[in-house]
Image 1 (cartoon, one colour):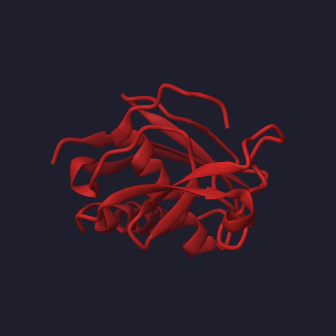
Image 2 (cartoon, helix red, strand yellow; image 1 turned 135 degrees about the vertical axis):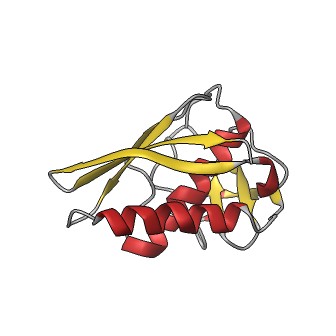
Image 3 (cartoon, one colour; image 1 turned 90 degrees about the vertical axis):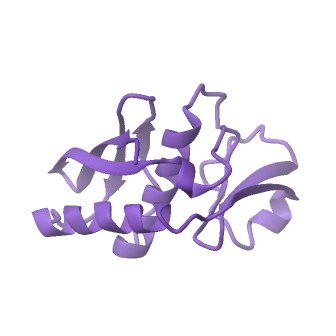
Length: 147
């Protein structure tokens, strides 16, 4: 993980999108992402192209989590403890022995150094503005709008 200047709302929405994709497709968290305040994108490795309805379902599932007013918390845990419940494959080799784990209630947990909102109710409305699929890579582009 590198230090990035992420918008807390957008960054927390990325966590929710990642977990939604993991649950829906059994894939890993985003293979690549670019998170900015105005618009963001995440890439996922999935075997088949999703239908327009599936994309809408993803958007609806993310918004359902956001509207659930879930608290965002963090805790410091050792890498040894974290590997029992997290995929640490993206952790750099020089990461410290103790890492920060950010939780979106019981919905998601992720090792992360970025800023986040305190509650999902602060995020706003999540909108997938476009998507593309090629060579088993789904790119989702999204924005946030005030509720």
